[in-house]
Structure formats: structure tokens, C-alpha cells
Image (cartoon, rainbow, N blue to C red; front, side, top):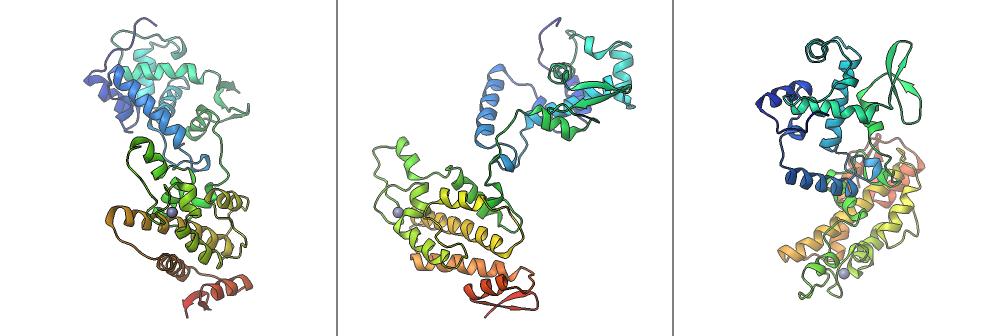
Amino acid sequence: MECSKQRPSLEFVESAFWCLGGDSLFPLFPLSSKGEEAIERKEDLSQRLHPPKRIEGGLGVKPLREWNETLLVKNLWRVFAHKDTLWSKWVNLEKLKGGSIWDAVYKCNDSWGWKCILDMRNKIQNHVVIDNGSYKWKKNDGSVVNYSTQQVWRDLRSNRVKVGWHHVIWFKGLEPKHAFIMWLATLHRLYTQDKMKSWMPQVPLLCPLCEKTNDSINHLFFQCEFSSCVWKDIKAKLIFRGLPYSLDSIVQRMAVYPFTKNIWNIVNRLVIAACVYFVWRERNARLFRHQKKEALKVGEDVQNYIRWKLLSLTVKNSSAIRKVADLWNMKWVNNRFKFV
Ligand SMILES: [Zn+2]
């Protein structure tokens, strides 16, 4: 390299936007070195806690830095594969003067966006192969395929651990707010009193539901005498007998069963997420709004929610459907559940 990276100019903003084909400019905006470190720390933490894919236990949100790198590879590929675009023609003709981009070096007056593209060469050099005279992408498993942004995105990310419980939480039909609270509870990321205690050790904190001890994920779901009452009544309406009074164990047990459109598969997942949501909502209502409901009433809220959800399903008659209708005090008419 002939010189280090410089702060980008207005020219960079135009070129970056052009290079990215109109994608978000945010990842390439100039940052102070302190700002870059701060963002990297934040991204490391967010990726450790919330990986980008749901199957990895995350929310399914792509981290901008990784996604930006993937798109930079696309521009790099266009240049060395001589793709028929105005920009790649201009780069090969004017910037590289007919030379290879693999031999190009930084120049002091190069834009920051161009330097970022050149930096991606190190990351992909082991993935680029020539097959029958054309450039191909070598996947992490060694197989060779045509270039695709999706494949680059997959291969540039380091191996991430997949979780077995993602399908317990993320499925069509589950209300987003229920899924979100259930997801946080499964990861033990809800702000319960056992975490708050370390910030304010002098403040006495008691579970607002039973007022006997600090609340925690294990206590709220469902070892607390209040929430255990709710769970006891609700789980009697499930076909799974003997479900434990521990969210971790419940999720583990549910994760064993692959998600299917079986009615019990759907109802079980709806019920667990609804119980977690309504108990958490009651806990917060008592803590922050000083409003109280009895365990029986919270259980009724869960039941009513599930019954309304059942109304929206189109189902064919079967013994499982009749059993669900019986347990949830409904009837089956013309492929739909109805209130009795
Ligand atoms: Zn309690």
C-alpha cells in the first residue's frame, strides 16, 4: 500500500453511493477512529447477543457492516470479471489502465470507497477460481458455483452456531409482540430484578406478582406461585401432559418437535408465547402502573387470546381438531372454529 486511508471527501460520498448501487451509505460514512472502535464494539456485542439469522437465535436483521462488505465484493467482482456495466468499464479503462485489479495499489487521492473495495480482495481471494475460462465462486465447502450475492453473504460470515428453538418462537401466526417477548425470555434478556439488583443493590426488590423474592426469568416463567397458577390452568388445555414449570425446559422440549401445520403444534406454540407475554405484561402493570389482576383473570386473558386466534384458522375436521375444540370450549363448523 502506498499510503494509509484518508478521510473521505464529498467525491467519496458520490462514488460510494454509485459503487453501492444506491444502497445505504451509512456504513461508509466517515468516522473518527474513536467512533469506529465504538461501532465495532457495539456490533461485536450485538452480534454475540443477537445474531442476524433467526436460526442462529437472532432477530433476522442483517448487520450493516457485514452486508456492506458483501455488496463491496459485488463491485469488485464486476471489475475483475469485466461485467458489462458502465462503472466496471470505466474502472478497467481509466482507473486500472488495462491492468489487473489484483495488482492495484492505493493512491493518496483515491476515494475511501475505492480503498474499501480493494480491501475486499484479501477476504475473497481464496473464493475466486477460474472454471472453463470464467470466474466462479468457491464456497466454504469447496464446491464451485456461479457468483451470487447470497452465496457471498453466507461464505463471508464465520460459522455461526444454530439454535434448535428458533421454530418454537418464529412462525407465521404468532403475534410479533408475543414472539419478541418470548425471544427475549428464551435468551434471558428481559430486564428482570435479578439483573437490576446489581445496579441498585441498596433497593429492596420483590417480585410484584408474589412479593416474596426477586423476580428472574426462571422465577417468572413459571416458578412464581402467581405465574405457576396461570401455567397450571393453561397447560391442562394442551395435549402435551407433564410440561415442566420452567421456560428453558419447556422450550427445549418443544424444540425437539419440528414445526408442522399440525393443530397441536400450532396451539402449543401459541399458548406458551401467550403465557409468557401475559405474565410479563401483568408483572409490568403491577410494577409501573400499580394495576393488579388475579391469576385467574390473567389465565382468562390467555385463554381468550387463544380462542380468538383459533377463530382465524381454517381447519379440516379431524380427531385432533375436535379435541382442540373440546378443550378450548369451541365448536368446529364448515372448516372453522366457532365460539360455543
Ligand atoms: Zn413471584
